[in-house]
Figure (spheres, protein in one colour):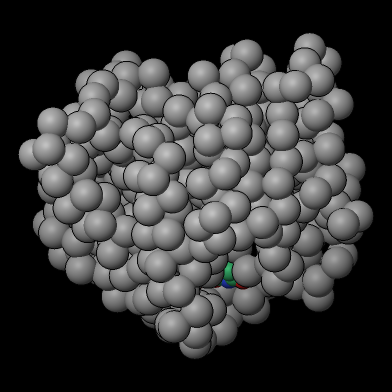
Length: 345
Ligand code: UDP
């Protein structure tokens, strides 16, 4: 297959590209390099067994309909994996218009280009942030829980889910073969265990990389955002899924998509860890000590999010291979130790 991977120079996107190349697919990466790294794509190009014409890279924007349409036609793209997005809850609260422009309008633009080019398979990176703050009786969160996002990031992703549902209904009514999946990620963590590619965000705000940077001495410690939540230890609880398992789920979904399908899955491991538990695990894995401060709550943070993640397993036989948080953090640590300053570009 030929797959257009938007955001393929980013953290999750580059792991998807790695897997697709290893599976023998042709991959076209589209990334505006706002937050992605050209070096990640170059590293993947150099992987053993990757053919010279197997990977193409285009530095451009998903909102550039002319460019995207031409890419799809020129390369004979049959599937889109759409990772390109802004993905910080806190930032989204401060810049709602930017989040809706990049995430919502950007996805619509991409879908219009796909429509024009006759590309009929679309896999969308959604998020558990679309569920907002589920009631205690709705945890663990299954796919049927009503989506009521409490921050612009979640709202921007939910808007795209709705656009996809409307568009696919129309295509079905017209007898056209569109199919899509919206995959609601919980917290994605870890890195390629070979250490070739990894996680490098600027600014970095995600918990595990922030902790590992503190362990490396690159930060003067970690601040826990809120210790007075109604959870066992007072800190927020999240479900951390390894990026390679997440990508494996995308491949399972891609291989299963039939014309007319509209598939919705949670991607998590079905177990929650508190911020304090993650810090303790990171201390075990890195064997480093660093200052931990207790700070204010961060705007837009729901107290507890973890998945009832069995649906994709029941329907497609997918199962997470990494279920131990220490192991997940160890793969991230391998990358951070090797690349303390991240990618050079
Ligand atoms: N968090 C924290 N300190 C940090 C970064 C994150 O306490 O420096 C908390 C954050 O409030 C949330 C959890 O860690 O409860 C996971 O945050 P992250 O930004 O990694 O992912 P999110 O759940 O927002 O997608």
